[in-house]
Amino acid sequence: MRIQVNVNGEMREADVEPRLLLVHFIRDTLGLTGTHWGCDTSNCGACTVHLDGEPVKSCTVLAVRANGHEVTTIEGVTPGADLSLLQQGFREEHGLQCGFCTPGMIMTATALLERTPRPTEDEIREAISGNLCRCTGYQYIIKSIEWAAKHGAPTRVEVMP
Amino acid sequence: MQVPAQFDYEVATSVEEAIELLQRHGPEARLLAGGHSLIPMMKLRLAFPEVLIDIHELDGDLRFVREDDGTLRVGALARHKDLLESPVVRERYTLLADAEKFIADPLVRNMGTVGGSFAHADPSEDLPAAFVALGAEVVVRGPNGERTIAVEDLATGPFETAIEPDEILTEARVPRAPHGSSYFKVERRAGDYASAALGVALWMNEEEIEDARIGMCGVGSTTLRAREAEEVLRGQKPDEELYKRAAERAAQECDPPDDARGTPEYKRDLVRVLVVRAMEQAVSRARGGTEDRTADGR
Image 1 (tube, each protein chain N blue to C red):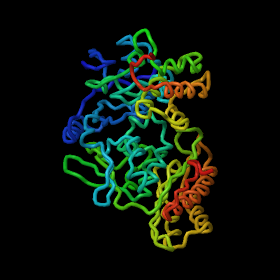
Image 2: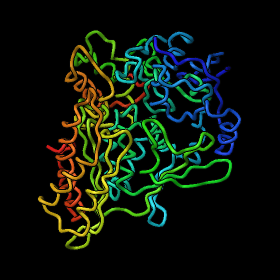
Image 3: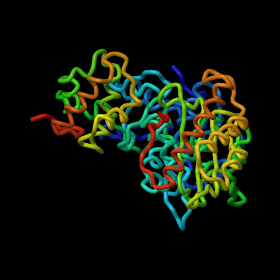
């Protein structure tokens, strides 16, 4: 089936099998490997992307479902060679160790800060409860998101002055 | 890599077209809404539909949560998060919001639909139990028009429903708001299916419980209604002794499976505890109380 998907603001077209999952479309068809493919069972959240602005687990969405819709991946919230405020927060507060969960965490937290610019710790914990981290534990990830909130996130492409 | 087996894919652009497609493709076709139950089952080869009819483009018709003339109407494509965030649900149908907090995680709640949780008919699914407590019905539409099915009669077995292969579930309706309600669940880890869970809805006057309904999940081969426990409560003044008697009845009315989530006796014990907690919370809310116990009842 021929599909057209707006990925990170760019219209991408491909011929795909209906059973192709969105995560594999993004990684294998489009070569955007920033989105990670983790548990494959909609538990870990490493594959989180935005579908029409909402964070979703792309291992449990068919690529054909995104036909005519907008998808944003980690590449789409990273301003060129720079880092978004949220990404800077992860650097400042040691929010990652192995980095496998980080793209998913960033996508979920980006959506959180767009809706709730100054979230409470409870709101952060609830928002990332569908994203699993096996290294740092969650304390530093929460601090990273709080750092970004304090420094004026949200935004998809804003760079710290 | 887990991928579903091959299937043909159709997109319906209206409810009528979805019904036509269901008729054309026969019983091996399945509707695809949020896909967060169906796609995992297809990956595991527990489901292998030949045709998927994607209905996500029907959001305009089927995605709503609203109260019309005292009836709560929830469209089949309302997402879990829509229920959780709905002010009218939080205020007047509180057990639905209670239940939603337990369902999976926020990312899954962005995709998973209310209609899907009915049509999937997992005996451990939370929402059908909460809607059973509310005395809700679902509306299904087929080639011969619309009909309604009481939620308590919807599941005919595990993952089986009274919906015909050429019918589509379009909405759930709650005919009257309870005066107080609550939903409690014990799960092995956050976001898991229930070891046992139940919802209570109460209609009260100054002194007595006029009507009570209890829906349970994870403790039988379908969503269950604890009719005998409700009978114990009806017409009585609420107190701890009464709750315990009702809880004992409810524990006898369920038939829990022996599985990784616990033994039947353990799950019956959970029901005994959860009925009491849910009653305390629902009565307190009916009397205007705003103090909630923590979600798992501690």
